[in-house]
Length: 57
Image (cartoon, rainbow, N blue to C red; front, side, top):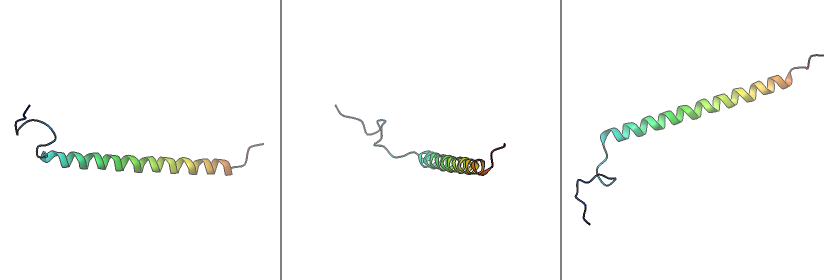
């Protein structure tokens, strides 16, 4: 079975929007990972502050 050269698939040239989509996905992943790191850092710091406080008698 032969395929025509213009058949759909991954063998054709990449679309111009492909690199923009890749950049958008990479940017959103970077922002998501940075926000996750910030949330974890704030959580750890708040736990440390809460443990440093004296217990009320």
